[in-house]
Each structure stands twice: as structure tokens, then as C-alpha cells.
Amino acid sequence: MATAAGLYKELWRPEEIGATHAIDIIDAIEIGLQKMIDDPVKYKAYNAPNGWGLYKHFVPWVSKYLEACKANPDAEIEAS
Image (tube, rainbow, N blue to C red; front, side):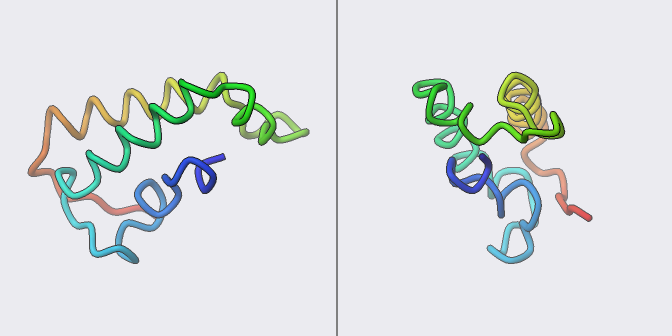
């Protein structure tokens, strides 16, 4: 789902795209989140059969992450 929306590297591999601060990923997250909101049927098709990755949980999480990035654009980001 994240890959289809263009968010995977921004959320889980920011170092691979040279992103070090929240400001570096805000635009991409906004675009990817909007894609998911605009076409829920497409992205719900990526729901994990085991329930460990559902649209209904992912979209609000991405939204909150985006809010945090906007509130703290100079924050250093890293994922593990």
C-alpha cells in the first residue's frame, strides 16, 4: 500500500532518498496520502489478509505522521 502510494521510502527508508529532516518528506507524504484518500478502493486492495496492514489504520497513521512533520519540519527523521 505504501509503495503503491509512493510513500514507502519516505516512511521507512528515508536515508535511501537522502531525507534527513521532516521537511524533506512533507510534500511526498501529502501527495501519497491524498492518493489514498481519493481512491480508497484501489488502496484497500492492498489490505494484508492477516490484518497486519489495513487501509483503515494506515491512512490515519500517515495523516498523524504528516501532522507531526508539519509541526516539526526541522526534526531529524530516521526509521529502523
